[in-house]
Length: 221
Length: 221
DNA sequence: AAGTTCGGAGAACGGTTGTTTACTGGATGA
DNA sequence: TCATCCAGTAAACAACCGTTCTCCGAACTT
Image (cartoon, rainbow over all chains, first blue to last red; front, side, top):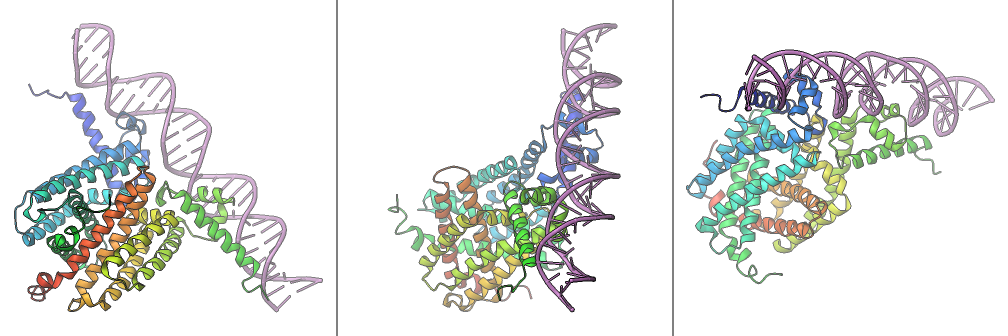
């Protein structure tokens, strides 16, 4: 036994991962569209031409990075959604998880924040698609909560997108705050994030009174 | 009369503006850190070396672009804040103004969205600083509104940042939606933005009931 | 009218880029 | 054991990059 995958493929995936890691590191202070193929291979310690054994071009590597980065984030979101706490505690937990995730995978966060609107189309689309799936998942979870009784699907979806967007934005802001040196900056971001989520939560609880109550069903078209 | 500025300086600022325009155009499908000096001068029709007569490097040009892009946005924000409508109408107006601005200065929006977390530190900081000034201005305006009675300065500031962030995000999303081809995508973004602002507005109206009333003051220090 | 300033041109530099082509040597499967 | 596969190598390619240095000529100053 024990040669389930083969020495060959194992080694290949190892250098492939090395390429991804090296690229991610270099992307801390660059954007993908300015990252050179040679730069990455040089850091890994292989010949430039070996790059093509793994990716057609840097864009393809970028898409692979998206999957890796959003993959870990996906776990994080699931963990949050699984909680069944009251609103207030859930907010604290959510922010805490974001905080921890930023400290654990800072390069992933930076990459996603940077390339979400970056210069490589394929990567933008990959991120957008992944975040869209997040929103859908969040929407499904929100729907099961009693607060969402009587909500239209569009409204739930709107709220989910607001949440997802806030998560990403908060993570990016937290990362910026941590590296810019100011002492209390990170804590200020965290407190702000909590308050913003709380405000959204309050808006959510009173939504049907005036927002969705009267005009939602018989709206435009 | 009529030679108030001098032919010399006028011509200089003219090619300087040409450099900015050309760069902005090229940045529609690139990010700043991958934009070459020669690329820009080539498009303007001047020698590469002439670039240095106007900017030390691309980063400096980027900062100039930030001022230009956020300058027009500043006018927009002021216009919104000047309104005295009721909450509902104000939301519609706000979104409409954002919509119009995106159609009028799409390249500015794209640039800000892309370089806000981009690979050039000086540009990021310039954008962050400008958005910070926006938030402060919005906060000052919010404070004068009756709804904000009894709010702490921190809470007002938090709300202001939430609004500013939403404006930028909405503008970027709208731009993406418009160019990605889907017919109803742009309208969907607009409707979503309106609903999100409405939800925030509702949360704002009920904030003091549970958010700032009981436990806020007794928190940290 | 003479002298100075300065935006822009031109050539040249060392260096880096992406990509192609041909080749090597160890893991792989018959 | 032997033929095959294939990740990685090495060299060479033309193209482009940012930057320096020298010079020009028209706009300015006096």
